[in-house]
Length: 142
Image 1: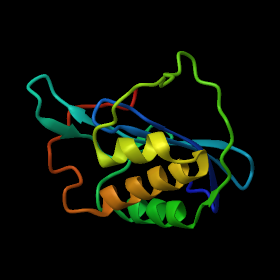
Image 2: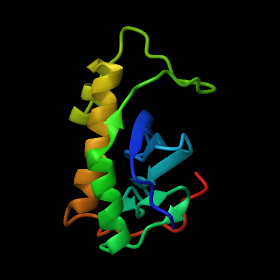
Image 3: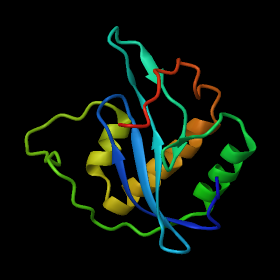
């Protein structure tokens, strides 16, 4: 895999499946890149997590490649821009938000949310809990 020299994150998505996160970026040549970290629950309500994907390629845990990518993510610029998404969920009052991460995403600005989600991927991948809840199969197609 060729690791870009620089990334600029411009959009992020956070699924309500337990926190699966998608980050969208461009590199120094304008090429598009996608970071995906699947997280969710199995049919029994047990937390499952997958490993980090970069451009739909599974990144081996605790590898040199993973370290290079995390450094790249940490040094990336943020340049939020609106991205049209089909069937985007709109929150209308009244609604209740449960959980700090959701509270932050609902109340935060687009730029704050992008920073929060990039940082949350880095923090989770570097944590001892990363991958420990069991991998729920190949989730790269989500």
